[in-house]
Image (cartoon, rainbow, N blue to C red; front, side, top):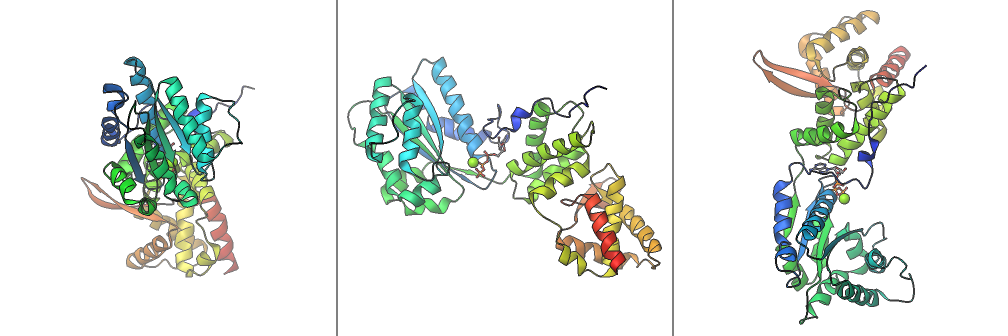
Length: 391
Ligand SMILES: Nc1ncnc2c1ncn2[C@@H]1O[C@H](COP(=O)(O)OP(=O)(O)OP(=O)(O)O)[C@@H](O)[C@H]1O
Ligand SMILES: [Mg+2]
């Protein structure tokens, strides 16, 4: 017997530290950042610069900074200019300036001792090393809010001042501060803030089509051709749009769905795999709430579950769901309610967040499409059958 074929060809693109070769839909942001730091290549050692990247969870802040850093190093090498980008996550360093600086120092001197120095001595050491290496450094401080919260605004002030104090001689240290929350910068003193504020990159929430492009990009590298259909990409991108355009959520669900496809020996990712992956991240089905629904609402929900249990499509028309509801009613010896009432039930379920719906416009008019975003159909079917049997 042969090994069952995995849907994946390369799972390393899901690695936490993976930097995508191309950042989609962030061209303007990347260009802005590149232009801000252009002097490093064009007029080396003559300036230093600071910038802020702000934006919500999974909006691509870390990816943007790291992509910028890699491109900068490549361009510097091509133009034979000395420049480095170092990315440090402040939260992983518990917001300690000392640990953050130690990371940077160890990038150049990997055996540098972790004791016997204060943070400000480490900063002097870092500057000395930059002199010795005769290089320029852009330091990316990711999740910088943890640093500001722990050390106060002085930490950033010191990092910017160290360069300004050296009036003479080459400029070597530039900063990129990254944070979800722009409010943290308020606690900085006015002069530090004013230079930072001029250079803000704001990352907007990704829209559903943008998330779909990001998913396609990742899926093409990670999956066997044909394992992830367009419908699956659309389905996941819609879930992620709902999570405030979080690209990480989208990619995690894609990965999780692939894992479940493998577990089920499936050659392709099905909507049920997506629902299983999504439901593991957030618990969507609250049993008490479902228990309090009216009997017919519960039967509609069972109808929805039944439909998706047998369908390979992520979306159903309301007509399909109504049919399925009719069958459930028959099984339970009940007369199905009329169309208007059925719609009200659907809206009620939508309000609870168990199902979601959207309008699709085509030549034949507008159709309401229903999906089950976060509960596997199998789990819902089991649960609803149990609840309805209890009466
Ligand atoms: N424009 C993009 N093109 C391709 N991949 C992207 C893009 N934006 C984000 N990603 C991917 O989405 C995931 C989340 O992005 P990233 O880690 O940069 O978000 P973040 O804004 O730093 O989130 P957080 O605030 O939670 O740290 C990563 O896997 C990243 O590679
Ligand atoms: Mg990040």
